[in-house]
Image 1: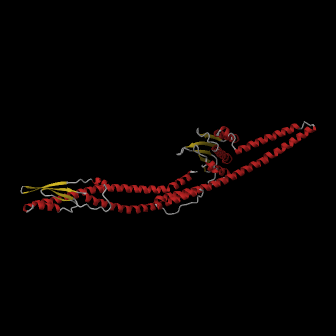
Image 2: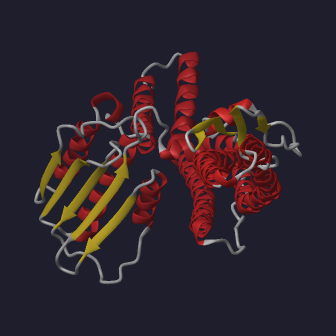
Image 3: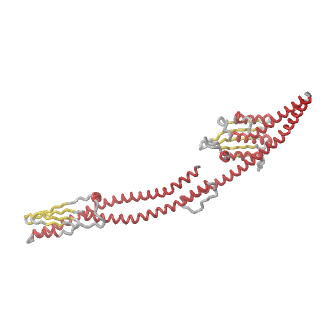
Length: 470
């Protein structure tokens, strides 16, 4: 399974999870906000209950003190005090008792909760303590007892609890549809990612014509454009690979044709001659004549020597002689010596970086062929007085780097609009198949420079051509 298929599988497995995670995050924010709001509401409710209790005590105390001041003209102060206490019956917040000569108690009514009893944890959270106020009753020096006022926050807490319940009910009615709408909206928002996953699956299957064309929000439009550019580049690369494969097959057929022609034209006649000479030797031996045999044997030796030279030449075309045995630098040095013996008037210069002695079985032949073709073009067509060959490594950010091969001469150069011959075309195709690039710079009368830049495959990875042919 390749990396693209893994991405598709992971997305398909995690798409619903992503929606669920977003919903859970929204729910968590909602719960946290509700908790903080509840804490603030409880704090305000506690202060409100305390304020209400203080107000109830103050009002009750003011009424009692006013009534006590009027007892001086009362015919029956005790009866009036009992009547005063009983007048507080129905008060929701205070309990009033008369202690002394009379006995009377006024307790607040216990209201019935509509949704259930107030939980004790809510009472503890509000934490509103009861307040007790004692007012002594004395008229003209006579003590009639004490009126005790006690706050009872039960009804007020019950009212706040009912308000909390109503608020929670309203929030529930609001939050559930809201979460449902958010869930549907997130699903709609993630729908372009589903189409992107479908597009990736098609590309993974080799369909590079897939494109995303629908309008998207700005956050996803860049992703759509990147996907379309990637698909376009993959389509171009696939087309280029097909063309390279066709070119490779064509070159293979041409090489096979050349080998077959060489075998037929160069080796075949000599094999036929050897067969004729061997038959003549057999005939002379049978007739007892030994003198002609010496010349026939020498003819066979000459024919075999010629065939050996032809076979070495053919092997040199298939694979450079000495490249595997002695390495890239020495093979190129031998190549330069080959041309130096034939064109001794040309000054040759070879510069190979210390870390560029060899690059493996696939890259070395490509470098060799580039130098071979460039040298051949220079000495045969450029009429130079000097040729410089250099091989160096150019560092790259990914750590792989690239090999830079340069062959420069000071000959007559090429026309301003040169036509690419078969040699340069073949060299360019070979370099391009390795993922590199070939540039030819020339001005009439100022020489020609051929530069090939070929990336080096990172350790543990396949070379570009090997991947293209696999």
